[in-house]
Length: 306
Image (cartoon, rainbow, N blue to C red):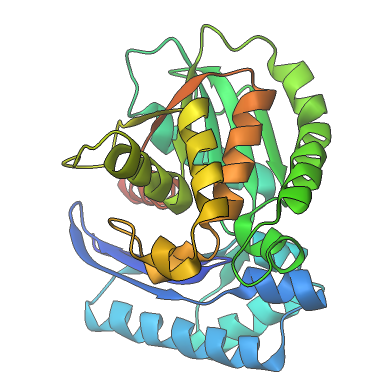
């Protein structure tokens, strides 16, 4: 059975059409998280753009004769004062319910996809950084849901309007941000406990971009792919320093740098470094799977059971 997944995220919308193999993937950036952080709700311009884009994806799904179409929304819709109303509006316009995932559900779905990549590890701590949230999941490999499940509105798009100035993260702002993250994560760290025996895994587009930068600019490597690349706290510290020293045009000239991610990368590296410090973790692996793969796996399981 051919299925389509429409994701309404904090930094963009994604369409995946799947029948056991990828047929089509589309994505379009739309920084809804920044609007929510600045105004507390979606603007009329946001609503218009989001509705138009969701309708385009719905049309594409129908053109592929998808028997099932699922639309979900994440953190920006949870945070926006008008998030539920906008989700309902888009649902009516495209003729498909848009369900806002709970924070715990988002972490659990991402966790399921991530742990499947590490079947030989006894346990995993997943760190998921997106535009909307910072998610943490931990537990033994093989269980359906993480034993510990935490989500915080510490995503790059959510924090950017308050933390970045023209794409730069000032040292004083970074210091305050790191303190805020450390204090916010303390209850989670107390629950998760010692991490020395657990595999730390980073997921999300920013983590992948940073891992690629580490290996090309610091280690002089040209990796075939990002999946499974390792990074450590000193690597992230190197990038913190590098981003503070170079101009924005020089940042854009770094190998593999994409303009759509470049503005938020200084913020992403600060968030991930502090999270690893809070976990008392020296190194981590990066994976290319995440929420989309978890959602698709659940969708296919539901279809087989139907």
